[in-house]
Image 1 (cartoon, rainbow, N blue to C red):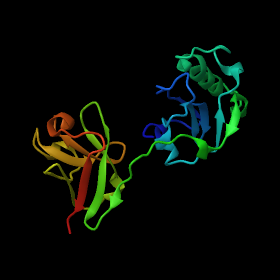
Image 2: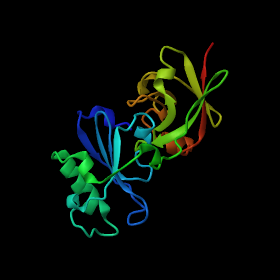
Image 3: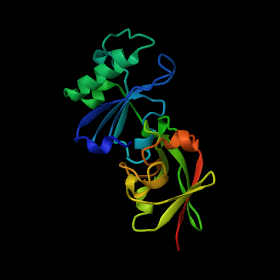
Image 4: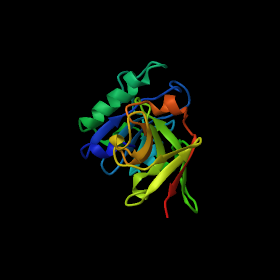
Length: 208
């Protein structure tokens, strides 16, 4: 969801997070206005599907574009997804890859949404990056031009613009590079220091 907008039109994105490999989950390719997705139908593409309408979807049933007609039961990334993505990037017609299915039939994860309240926005932690920064599900556009702060687990963090707006080791709230409100520690690890976990509730409030 975050990476897709930065790639050229027509890019083929291959993503394989596939604990159900070899089971009943479908192998799919999805066509969007600006590019394609190839991977398992297990919710991996939920974020992008929640923001962009799919033009077409196919189940990857044509073995002519697999590495082998008898793929490994445990390595579809090698035997199905990567070859299909390569063929698609080389000009093979999208419709030749398999049977069409409707986008509403795709598996989608229950992505949390933020909710407007009387004083601000109620949200949650949707992602923790490798720096320990806590990315919420609140779009940064909601706080643009406003004075705001975040409250969570007894802490209050003023909304700022850069990490260096607070002292080293202090907590801060700001809009991160992909446009979401984030909780961080200046030169520190917010996840380990503040003990937040995925799904934890946060409250963003505006100053009147």
